[in-house]
Image (cartoon, rainbow, N blue to C red; front, top):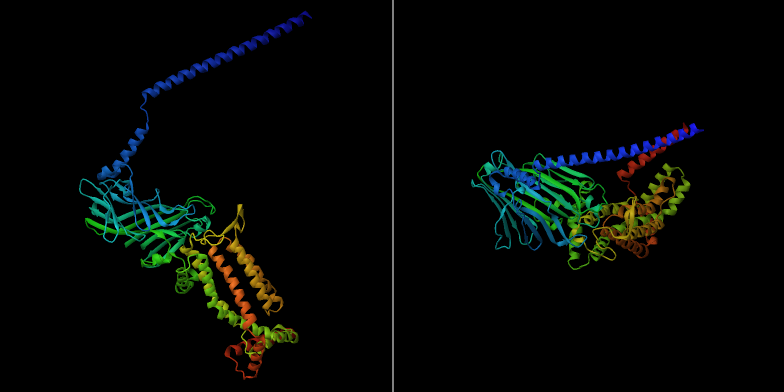
Length: 616
């Protein structure tokens, strides 16, 4: 027992010793670590005191040294303070910067963006300059040099001249001269060089343009889809590359007259009066999400080369357009820029002439005495429907003939259940009655160019931009009565009321036409019976994101068409009179046309082949 007691006491003392040891050891370890850290901090401090400090000043010095080296003989222009000046005319405010002696931005006085501020093209991120040899071993782009602004001068015609100049000690001069007209969007830009053979390599001006397209419209997705890289060449004329869903690029191996970064309703264009000899341009979508609401929607870059005379003093004539995509404005320049207004292209190129010769003159005439563009569209719709009403009448007159003959056609179907035999007997009946079953289709086909012409016109008419009507705030964009919190497949993030009215009126028109139709219930035609009801539903998803002007037009067009149909059917077409005319036609001698003879021969041959197959 005693031994056990001693064992317990020994173990307890041993435990106390272990605890005391580890406690003391931990304290000593922490003290040692603190001492080592103090020594390291002291050494670092001493090292820092003996080391040359890296300061912002040194960084700026290195940057300045790089700029001075690149500036060469134009060392005085290597650094400076950026200063801007604004020159206005009747249409725009042009802001210039002494850094690069270039245009920084252009504000259009007649146009506002969705937040009511002025439409601004360019901006602080706009860079336009050209490379110059500043010394034997260095070169620099002019947009990195600080120019001297000369006093603005005014001409007798109201135009203003803005000049920025650079000089070096050897007498070389770089000058950017801008002529701002009194009432125009096109700016003349003259690059004047003294000592050009030393400033340029191989007598070539290498021009670089970087800019950003900013959001101007409420409907950003549609604006992006309508953005193109446009250009005009001597050999191929006008062309464009779509940039709306990613990027667009073009290499000008054969040169170009001008290039443009075009948005839905505005564009920035660089024009060379003596043609760019080569170059390339790129538009890149800044956000892949087409519903993105960022103000910056495209990054644009152009690198272009111009051949200049091999003389000491040269003047290179260029032009800059910052303005609207207005056909009447662009047309007066006579350089192909008017083609940026898509009045019809590709397989629909022919509708351009319908727009130029009919739609646009009538629209402009109505707008000259009607201030509200919603009513202009309604009056234009009524005009078009009245002009095409003779075609509508002819179509319904043909349908009335078919309706009069329907009892006889039903009897023929019972008498000749075989399809080939019935078709032959049907043609005989039509020939005897003087009825052409296709005559009702031709008037409808003739209206197709008008349909597509109006589709193009309403998509590109800047006159409708910002114009409200009823609940639509902007006829150039969709009219949204409901906004969804998330994107709905096929529908988008909104619901357009004019699209709904279009679909409802289309459905009523289809129901009326089906009631008046003489269409048979043949198995092959069952689907055709339902097509007039299906199409309004399909077009609902297509039209929901289109401009309100377009869906307003189609709504009014449906109502006017329905009214014309009612008048023709109720008050103009007399079915008894038509039947009497058909009976009178039957009495007259018939002479088959070559087409009828061929058709009958083909049907007879098909009938013989069917009979042969049955016998076999």
